Image (tube, rainbow, N blue to C red):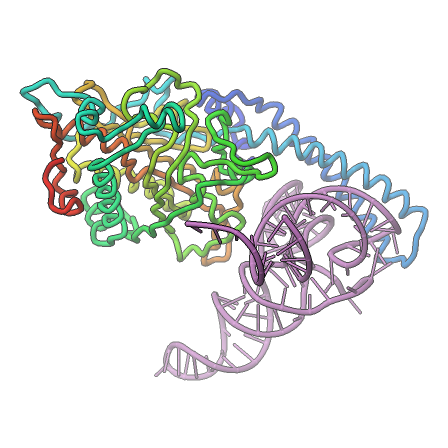
Length: 429
RNA sequence: GGAGAGGUGGCCGAGUGGUUGAAGGCGCUGCUCUCGAAAAGCAGUAUGCGGGAAACCGUAUCGUGGGUUCAAAUCCCACCCUCUCCGCCA
């Protein structure tokens, strides 16, 4: 939720930026409702003040007091109605994009800001990951379809070992302060804490209210509601949903920041609206595993933390030696709570295109404001926390990239050097 | 699923109708003392909203919503959440 002050300071800009992100919000109406709410607040407070004065002085019922009480009931109701509408309208306003977020109409307008790595050259026609997987019996979607339907898979054999190797690799890197120092140094970022990540296995389900406060429940048809109606639970679509919300209604000490978590979780998405898209292989599944970074920082640390997260993502891709490019996502593509969004896409040689493997989301105070996650500074002022969320590594799509980039003529797949020690020294599968 | 207990400030914890926005303790901040630190003493220390240049003022908030009352943390109703025990269970 945006700070109303931002709207008051420059309503026209808020209106324009909202529209550029693809959200139609009636700012005039919002301000109108806000003024009405304040007017009714004054009426209510004035009546209450009179009422308080009377009950302080007198010790028994009086005609005046009774009349005030009736007026107060009406004033309270009137205020509540206006206040409800005000909050509802304010919630509809998306977070304002940072200054360097590109303009655009769709994801086609995302800007490539960096390319890294040498695209592999093959002296044979490179195969797709599903062709190679079939050869090894690594992926069984047909039987999964019988059991759970489309967009599910049995991942089998060496691919499972590869996944756990990736997980081990990332866990070790992000919990190691020396590694983080190295990443900071290479990135050239200043004033970043090298504080290691705390690994977490977060809840996979989330309450409706918390989901809404994260502003990630919508679009609802992308989510899975679970249990019966009274269960009030959803399956999360990213570890972000249950990590970012963990300090709901809490006050953190500024000196403890940044607080960094590395969550490992199986996530679920209905993939509504993507019928027929990415149906081959394991690119777009209803269920996928993900290592996710989440952090809570002061306002001052927020942006640099976001850039640090991207640096970590790049480091991991470089260590795995997967060619990639970095996209600065344009306004309509960064998401409602986002002030900035970066995607990293891995090169897929067989398909001659890039595949999104990472996202980095910078939310400023937008989520924390609704979650009531606050920070107490040394000077005793409380402010809303700044949240950052980013993919550390999505094993599924990363394995797709490894299979396709590391494939050999006979269909075997080399193991990236950094993963070999987690594969019992094996150099190929 | 059955039975019970409970939700109060950064934390712990008093408080069953009106000097309680809230005792006391811890923590934190400042000052005194000290070469310095510790200890001790004194003082301060919640948040939202609205108004104000500011000092400050008003108002709300003791899980949430509603009710009773001139007056509610305190009484009544509904709901939410947490915990404990039993049962079941990976």
